[in-house]
Image (cartoon, rainbow, N blue to C red; front, top):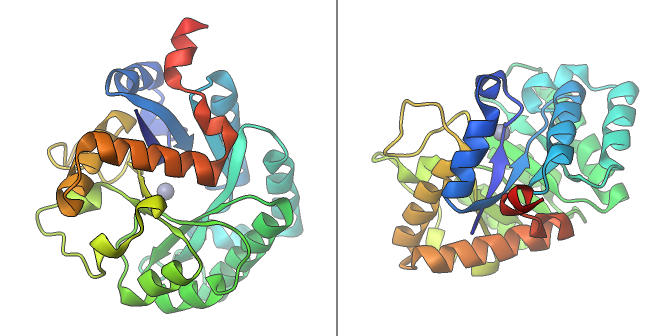
Length: 262
Ligand SMILES: [Zn+2]
C-alpha cells in the first residue's frame, strides 16, 4: 500500500465527489492520506475529515501564504486541534518568497512559532519551502521536531540542511514532469527518509498533468521515484509507508480499506 503524505482533501475542489475520490484511492492501493490544514478553519475541516475514516489523518497549521493572520488566538486554536488524536502533525508552515502573499517577516515569525509548537507537543512539522531555501534552512537548524520537507524540489542548501537534521523528503508529482531536473542528489536521500505525496488538488503527476490531482495518483509519483532510484514500485511502497508511519505515528497504521470492513 501507499501513503499520500500530503493532500488538501478539504479543498473545495473535492466537495462534489470526495467519497468517489477516496474510493479511487482505495482501488489504487492508497491506504492512508494525510489531510493538510492551512488555516485554523481549514485544519478543523481536515480534523473532521480524519475523524470520519480510519485511513485519514490531519495536520493543523498556518500556511506561509496566510502568515499575516498569525496571533495568540491562531496558536491557541491550532494547539487545541493538535490535542486531538487524528491530528498528527503541525503544518503546513514554512516560507514562500515566490508568491510573497504575506510579508517575509510575518512568514518567518509564524514558521518559527509553529516549529516551537511542534517541539512543545512532540509532533512532526510539515514544511513548505519555495525560493526561500537559506531562510528555511536557518530556521530549521537545530530544531528538535521531526521535519517533513514537503514537495521537495529545492537546491543543495536545503537538501544539506535537511540531511543534517534527519528530515524526511516528501516527493510530489514534480518529479514526474519531463522538464524536472534534480538540483540535489536524489539517490543520496536515505531510504528511511523518503515519502511520496500528491499535494492534491495541485501538481497532478504525468500522465494526469492539467487535471485535478487526487490521492490515487500518488502511484505515479512512487513509480517515478522508483525509476530515479532503481527500485521497484513494491519496494518504494514499503519504504515510504514505513517512513510515514515512523514520522507521523501509530494512527498511520489504520487504512482506508478498514473503512469498508467497518
Ligand atoms: Zn500543501
